[in-house]
Length: 524
Image (cartoon, rainbow, N blue to C red):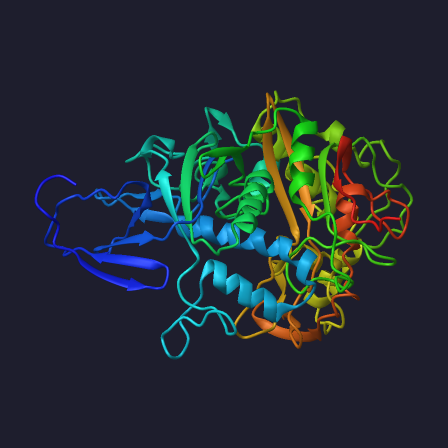
């Protein structure tokens, strides 16, 4: 150090040595790479352990939380807490392979690594008890996105703002997946951004200082999955906020290089995903996790997809609200995803649009039979859900829930012609949501952009929870959620590789050559 001595008070607690620096003293003191400085006047020095450095790049627009600047203008901000939450999710997704549904051990290990509220005595119980308190590592941003990476320049027009990226309008499939941050604006006459975000191509870096006895290998695996399949911010499960891992260094040694081809990408993923599972891993996971397939039950699925050329089989039984198709390709009949898409050069928006239009064709009944993309006919493969809505809206009591709840709840139905609304959600007083088991991700390899879909089927709702059905704001039914093994996840699996022969639906996608990462089917 240079200059006058810093008036620090030193305390020691376990693996930490904490220097308390009075706020009145503005001197800067350097302890090199072993220092992580807090905002509360403390500088914490960790005992020797592993140091991990990682660099990421956003692939699609990211909508993280917003923070106000000194000028009072709100701007999007990547926070260490959001990165830590994402790492926790991916670490947990791998834990089922070695723990099965041992949730007690899962919680103990997770609390020890990622931290948890202090116990009643205010201390940290280590071995032999519940590990609570500070995490076993510290994470900080070493390079945060600059202001010019905002989707909108500082001081720009108030939101909503025209939904354009680099002067090009956001296509319908992207707007569909971005519902929330991207909404239709009557004033602007089209989709518009209703939240500030961070541009694709933005690079940020993080550093993790790990305690010597922490699960460093587990953290590294989580970092890799986060940078190969994950994202952050609003609509991250629908492809927004996708991130790509560029560099990963452990204690000065590079342990990862970004994939440059599809084959490289598949190999990187397979190297980190579980290859074996404990014998007790025979049921659906109690949380979102990678799980094997077994007889009569499909496990986790992960695949790289492209626009398919298939269409649903003609001749489905018509109803009063679902007119008969006259043919597979005739006037008013269904068209394939490949035929529906307009040509776009390879880009994140082209890939995200392909995923979004595919989802619309697959699960939407459309407005007046048309999806919100080039007036293409909706496939109407969930016509039973469509008819269910009109039954409930017409006054009937709910005796079942729609199949599309598999995609997550709340699941709203709305008719603009009758102005009626029906919503399916979770009935628990403390939670009415269930995140989708379907995760979409856009990854750049070379000059190409891969569309990746991951499905993590697990316990849909906690034991004892139910689905609630409301007509407007009026409850009209409460239905007990099926057990994990009885829940029907086929609507999700069919999204990737459904062949259209009953009882399966037709997938709008095709898995690209060499694009299967996990099939979810039992291995012989």
